[in-house]
Amino acid sequence: MDGLTATAAIREAERQTGRHIPISAMTAHAVHGDAEKFLASGMDDYISKPFKITDVEAVIARLVPDQSKHT
Image (cartoon, rainbow, N blue to C red; front, side):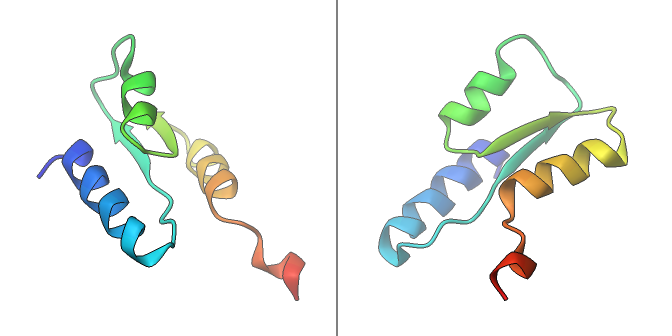
């Protein structure tokens, strides 16, 4: 199962649960239009290789709310 198929399955399951699971694409073969394709498929973000750890941290920060602010 590729990432697009997995995303579709996860998004379908979410319709039953009402929950949202953050999904980010990560690809080594970035071509023009990839980001748009992944976002249109239901993914929340996109990152291409090579990447720096700060790039991954930025994606996580965008997708996962800071729980410490709610305590």
